[in-house]
Length: 562
Image 1 (cartoon, rainbow, N blue to C red):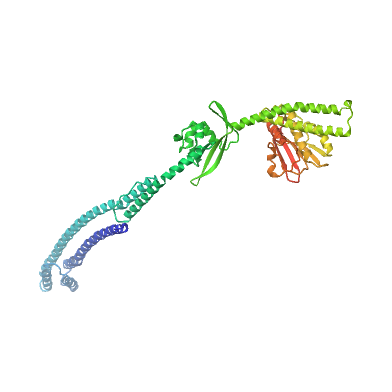
Image 2 (image 1 turned 60 degrees about the vertical axis):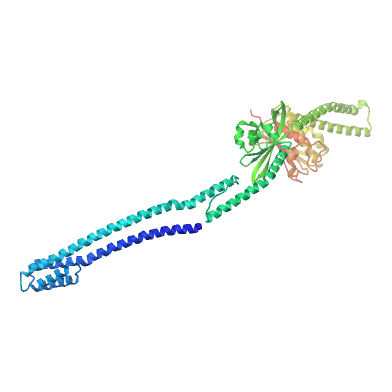
């Protein structure tokens, strides 16, 4: 029997029970109605007729014509309503006595007696029928109560058991689904019915069997892939940690576990937030997912430097993150060695270059002898190259100082206009050679600037030298100074050179970077050094430019606070 047929059968059974008890109740109610109608129709009417006749006899003279006529009407009605045993004889006697009233006045007594006899017969009939009705009602009550109790027990049993026929298998199906979701593919359902539940149980068992077969058939392959993935992860040169979007640790190679001081079995599959309270390095990684500054970790009594980086990945179509700690200790040591080497070379080169410049001064002195025009030109060229070599050496020396963090600053209050005039004075011969027009615009009552005068003049000379180098003969250079609302002194140098493309306007402040088409013959360190000098003094530097419309280099330094 199918589930649909079971539900239909149960519903039909309940309907039939309701129909049965309703039919029996209607039958007994109909019987009670018939008995009541019989009393009202027969006996009650006889009582009514007798009372009417009795009132006429008691109140009026029966011999009167009107009374006689009314009494005769009641008597005729009574003669038509004879229903009880003995009522016919009493009615006939009443008729006979009534007909004698006109001839014998004593017959009125017999009339009353017969009327009372008819009343007594009907009253006894009413009592008898009432007793019958009461017994019938009690019997009906007994039958209906017994049947109702029986049907209640059947219905209560049905209500308790029938829903279980549906809810029980559903609970078992839910249990089966939960077991399968936990990958317990050996679980089987046992429902030995031929309905839809039985068919569904067979289908679920077949599915579990297929899943179990698939699981075992792919287990070896999955284990192989897992081991291969672990081997690849552990072979990475950098410490790597993978997490899903909920920061659950998916994998961590041996180098990462070694840095974190953790074991694989206590880490993989755990929530990072549960480990963070006891692991400062993991907390640092989560708080700085894309750190740009190297950080130090002491391992085996040796300082190691790492750079943290993070990459977004997809884990089961969900976003995840891989954190990579790159060991840059070797590169940092090489960089320090390079810096020390450049510092040593730059310092050592300054002495012979100074000697070359002294020798050139002696050659140019007339006391050492006159030079012919070719020799003068040769000495001039040598002086230019020696100046260029000295400038490059100075830039390298400044850069090594910046890289080692040994920037000696002497901060003091300076007149910004005096700083600009000093820088322009130093470059006066170059501006004259190109016949450049230099204009300055200083805001009135400029406050003093808080800076290192030597470093500030160096930055101004570097920016002005670049502007002069890229200017054409007769171009106009504009130098401005103003105080800003945020208590900064703003220096700007506007030239009419070829301009700088937007994509290079930030890169030119990096070391060894030159904009395409640059006429500079230097090392590409000038702007990088200027940036470090300005930032070391608490300021900022930048450029605003468009191709073909010149460039406006600017830097801001703090005002002197008295």
